[in-house]
Structures are given as C-alpha cells and as structure tokens.
Length: 343
Image 1: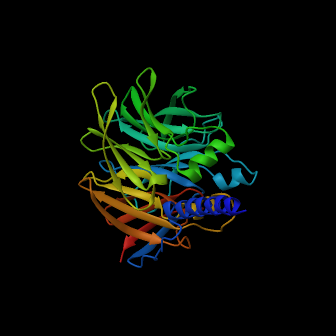
Image 2: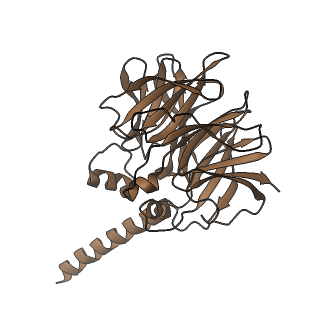
Image 3: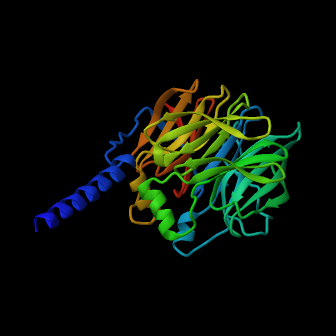
C-alpha cells in the first residue's frame, strides 16, 4: 500500500509539473494591460488580414487575407492579396487576386523589388495541400501569376521570405502531420519544426525549433530571423553564401511572436500573442477574443512592448508595422485591419 501511494504521489507530481509548465510557458499567467497611448483612426474591413508587408520607398502595403473563421465554421471563401496605397489617406485596399481562379487560402507573404517597375510576391497557399505561389506585381493593380512551388518537404508551411529572385526560405510550423503529433508539439513544446531553403532544390537548413513561425531577413541581408512563439524567442541565423544557415543567438521576448516586419531603419516590428492558450481557444471558437501585443526589437537585443490589448480592440495580432506616424496591426481571424496613431 505504501509503495502504491508513493507511485501515485509521483504521478500526481509529474502531472502537476506538466500542467504548470504548459501554463507558464504559454503565457497563461501573463497580465495584459490595454495600451491607452494610441487612438484608432481607421478600421479596414477585412476578415483575417494575417500578414502584410510594407514597401517604404514607394509607400504601399501588400496584404494577405484569408477568412479562417469562415473556413473553420464550414463557410469557406476565397482568400485574396490586396494593395494599399499608404499615402492616399483613404485606406481603401485594391484586390489584386480578383481574377485568380485557383483556390487560394493565403498565409505568409514576401515582397521583393526586382527593378523599377516590378516586384515579386511569394505567398504560402493552403488551398491545394500546401504550396508557395509566385507572382509579379506591376504598378498598383496588375498582378501576374508566375509559378507554383510544391514539395513533400512542405509539411506545414507558415511564412516565406525571398533571398533573391530565384531562392527563398520558408518555415514549417510543425514537424508532425498527425493530430497527436501536433498536439504534443503544441502542449509539450517539442522543437521539431524547421526552416527550408529553395534554390532549385529543397533542403532543410535549420531544425529543432519550437513552432517556427514568422521569418524575415535583416536589412543588411546577412541574417535570417525566425519567430519561435512556443519558446517565446526570436532566433538569429547567419546566412552563408550557399544559403545554408548557422545559428547565431536567441533573444527571449516573453511573448508568442508571429510575423516579423522591418521598418525603414531595419528595426523589427512583431505582432504577438502574449497568451498562447487564449489564442488557441479563440482560434477554435471557444473564446470570443484573444489578447494582442506589438513589440519592437532594435539593434538585435533592445526590446520594447509598444502595444497591448486584451482583445476587445485587436484580437490575436499577427503582424504589425509603422508607416510615418501610423501603426498598422493585422490579425489571424479578426474582421478588420486596424490603423492607429499615437496620441
């Protein structure tokens, strides 16, 4: 009997330790205080503006939109890419993919300037399995489909960034495809997701990441930046001439970082989920909202939380970036893209 009680106590202690680890490592105990220093100047109606990127030189934004809530609830609709002129002041996006006939559920995107008249857009698409679509943008309303990239190594692609016109990196946010495998990754915090490089061939160039999410390249093009929301860290990798990566350092950020954007100075702006369990409940339809946070990382290590909200104004922020005196915030499943200005 005594031996049985000891075994039982050990099991109870292990379960309690696991529960505490899960709650603490996902931000469950984090207090989110609503930031009062910004005012809303516009709300752009758009369901699931999960990712966007800004071209500061020409003053425009490309938005990746997908109604994830509708698909979750059995009412799927075509997602789209949008062009938004940031200097016009009217905040009226132009639908770029209105004539794009293939099923399209866009996710992470990348914008690369090719010359004075052309831009390359890469976008993760979840409509036909998992693919990466390549487009070229001419002006503000002419989008031309170029190619589809598909391979078995695209297990669960989340975000993509172009190294040059013919090569790119993308993240797989999970390493397993089964329900139980994904569950173990999410709650046990297993580091089995990765980064893949394509230059005509696909190869894994970084592994052992806990939920590899947003990805971008530093302003000087020397480092790859990878968001690991499940470990609350921003990972830095040095880019070799062959496209291979060597791990440099990790920066603990204390929040579940999502997409990574660069401003004109090369500082990082990251939409984040301070409470991952609340986000999971929101994404599954069990909660009406999830908290949001926007952080800025300067000079590699200088971290500042610029915006927090309990979800009543901005639910589940996934991307953020400044433009002049404005702050744009996109979300995973909310029905609007929010434009803020500092009071």
